[in-house]
Image (cartoon, rainbow over all chains, first blue to last red):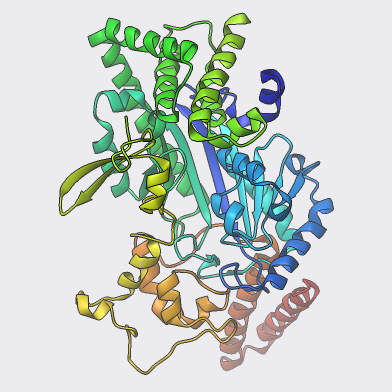
Length: 356
Length: 179
């Protein structure tokens, strides 16, 4: 497969770094958990019930007529190959849980990949919207519109006191998880990140690495999301998250300024060394790639590097994951082969940039 | 870097173990990592919400108590009559079986919700248009019925008749609402 064709198929709209505050904020994500009133939850339901839930949602698909869901595709997990599922997971469009463990699991995907609706994950329905940059409010509106459409045709499990009823008590109420993905090299370099994480935790938000729970913060990318889903309105949850994120963005900006002021030449050296590694290496593992990509992205944001576009980090962080590399290679790869492929893909991608 | 276990393959998994406050850096290849089962980071294992949940139920900070099969009383089994989920099992797996579990375990849930959600126990967000529409109407009918009661007691029959008509109007709406 040629790199141009591969990129055309692989890049989701949210990977284009064109949203508000895109120099620090990569994406905003909203997830709504919903269940159907008349079915047991996926944790205990039978295969027949799982398939009936899936059938019900499948039947109403032609009735979904709002913009992002027109021409949406239904992907059944049973019918996908292992590698296809892995790629969807790496793009954050489905969860590992849906890919591997669900019964009657499926996903409705909008053509621009901004909206994905997981069916029969931990809850019957999980609506997810991803937009680039800081656009929590817009993502919530999108998710709400999808939610309203589904609710016209499906009977939700809801009561006045506990709100939307979910499988896990940590999601009850609004069923809302709002997350923002940030690139924070300044706070990592100035060693402020640890303190920041602990104070964010105290405010009822969690901080995680790029691939969710338990994952490491590869390439200085952090995910911040709300923990409380009950007793606060959707708007308040988002407002609070917006405020916290706003503060972090300010701190990151001043950290970057401080680094430039104190050690400009060292920083420039680091940025260009990393660019050199990415442009020339023949073998590179995911950790080294992530760190170099982070440096290069910082160099672009600070204006050291001018001929490379900003979305390089967003794009290559996802595209250099094992599933994508194997898809690009057209088959299974052993870890060492992956590292070679990764180096090739990055070199080709960067050559594409400097050519134009 | 070479894998600490086999000393042959390159190490691809790097992590830090902390045991009794002592930090140990580990560098393993994928093969040895699998052998040693260190990749087993899935949500069902370890120090996850499921394990913590059982602890949350226990208001008495007595550690022995947490391990007991029945945290409330030894011979009382609380069970959801719709899906068969017992309170015990819910505590173990940290997941409800169906919407009805919320009612079945309602007495025990409020303190848990409070702890998980920063002191909150009552939904304060979106109300779905269809399911919520009938909730709003039902709420109105409840209030009107109370009003009717007081009006009858005060023998204000003219007003009571108006209220009765209003209740009928909403009840009709409720039936047409398809619930």
